[in-house]
Length: 145
Image 1 (tube, helix red, strand yellow):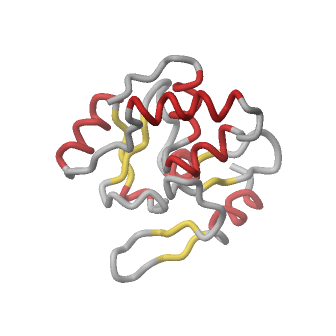
Image 2: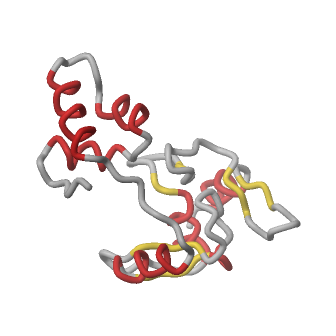
């Protein structure tokens, strides 16, 4: 790994002595996950970048989960790799619930998007969900509640 890139990453970390989390000081997305912008290429989730930087390659299709349940944490000692099922099981065990969109909101999202006045990013902000949820709603790939 490029030393300058590693330093750029570390310079965006605050090491919290109380909870031992390495909290991301850079940009956080709507769900609180850090975004790291390497020199080239697309931005990467900071916790995934940290895992690869300090531990190793993430197997294809796998998630990098947090033992500490802090999405802004990039401490490699707090990170573990799991499947989608592992990630959901972890969420249930920690009594977290995913943000969901009701049927009424589902219809409103689709209507608002059709007006061309709302981007997916703006809709995600309004409905307090991730952009991928909005994308799934718009592509009829969402199982509303």
